[in-house]
Image (cartoon, rainbow, N blue to C red; front, side, top):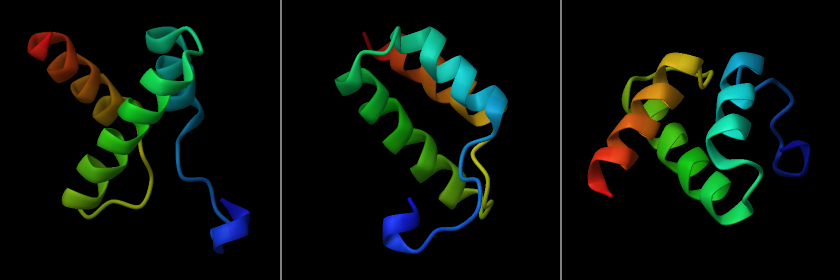
Length: 65
């Protein structure tokens, strides 16, 4: 993220752990869930993606499958 000028934490450490657990490190799934979490965080006008947002994104993704 520093390459694009972001010098702060974007995902909380709890959110990162949950993303890793949910995707088992599968890059395509990780990318998709991270993008959805970033969109939801922006929609809520927050600056940090937190565990609650990631959890909701994962739940919504599971319902869609």
